Length: 218
Image (cartoon, rainbow, N blue to C red; front, side):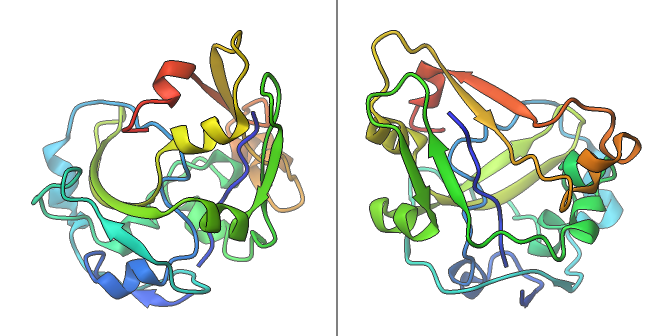
């Protein structure tokens, strides 16, 4: 199973809790199945200004319709949108936390496709509109705790990965779901230059057991 669905957006936003910001997003931050690793929350993270409302230029296309989950939410202070979109691990654009925001400004993400193949009875390739038309979107507020000892509280727009997996109809012998990222050296300097990309063997591949992938929190 290959996973190729990457963010796209271009307007100014300084408050992640502003509903208009979420409705202006084209992409699904959760990207249908990325599982955040658990770790310890560093008290210094918030002290270093993570909750400042710095203006950043991000991206958008058309509004998204979604419902807000009452079950999967929290009343904790949410991390500002500018921080969420400028502090990332995306080694294809560099190992620095601000490298993706700086180096992916002109990254072409539309048109884009997501392909599911392998041990499935219904191999499929879907574009943005296919995905958005097939699955109702829901907003959930999750605490993301990284093994690097930093944390964010973020609203995610998306849907449960199990809906997508069931559409592909895995075969009875299938045990795992593999996610393979895009391999595009022309657009991704970290793939083109190992010193920028941390010397990783690209394309990057991650995996889940099938039962993990079918869990409602995924």
